[in-house]
Length: 273
Image (cartoon, rainbow, N blue to C red; front, side, top):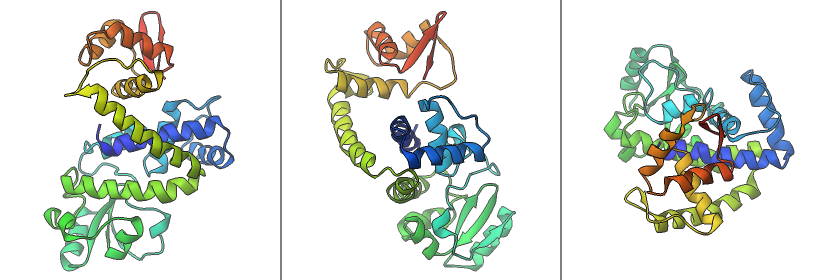
């Protein structure tokens, strides 16, 4: 998990809070995205549903698609989603290509161009397009990857540019789509506090101690549980082994997962909710 997938998960938690309060704009947006992708409308919006919504809002099919693409795991020619496109750049006239070879040829012929993926296609754009997306056209990001985000996929430059794209979409498109202004302000203070908790209680990837204060303990529990997979069933021994990587008192942490509604348990199996 990197900063990009963490951002999608953060947005998912925001959406869950908005939908729990029956925010009108958020509820409408959730219904639109769900119908577009032919998802069933759940009786209650759980985190796994909101992760799919947040991923779809960012230009992916669902959470798993976002995890693969933003995690740098997509293979050449696979669907890269609409991440590098959006309503804010629809006014620009760009060169579109079904073939990567053709897109590269156009890029080489245009010294002011930048090659981006779009689903299973490619487009060559100008610096104005990048600026509209909130992405820098500075040489320090682009020269090392030949102004080509397909060639540079997974590199440090690609990661930096993708972070810029996500940051801009959070402060502009995401906030507008979901009417999330106030809850995002609340999130900023929450993130600052969570960072302090992590610095205090996590050293070299392990817990120094389990926080006694519930608010701080929840920060740690969420950090731990987010490293487990959705839709997977774990036996108790798996959970114990996982938690032992972080602290010797795995039994307390395991119980806290259940008590705080982060996991459910039945017939000896555990799963994320």
